[in-house]
Length: 189
Image (cartoon, rainbow, N blue to C red; front, side, top):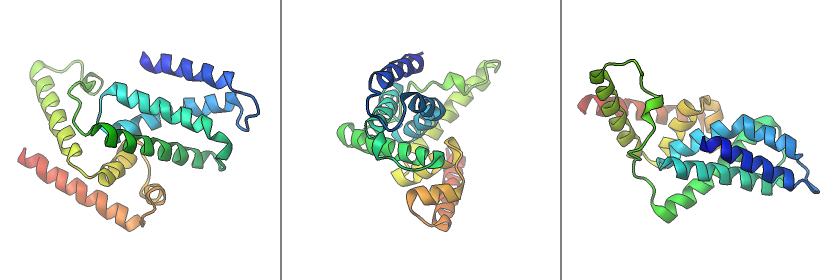
């Protein structure tokens, strides 16, 4: 619900600021529609904050992109990297200001759970989700970002390496070691 009102507000704002723009407001609105969910997932994975904070940072990402659109050069592939860099900087700023690395207990788990599950299965799923979020919070920012890009955004190792300016081997090894460590810790929980 909040996503729709945020989208409408931002689209209206884009249309009111069309003068002398290199990027047409309609093109930017299309860019927003195509990339909102990717940026939202990325911010959510990095921030581990309340959903409202994630929505605010996602909206701020697009507002800053709109304000600096004339400086952007590149193709459609480069757009998502540009947006994620803006989002990353906003997450870093927010983390410094608020120290927002606590797990949000109000995660909307309902969208992840089976609505037809028995109460016992539902309770076990909720407990396992809480354990997983606590494990993810314990990761370094860089490692968590790699996992977010790989498993929430769906990027290949090559794309992650280019984005983070690392070698593909370092990214691949880091992801594999992190998954092994998470799997080991999961068995101990």
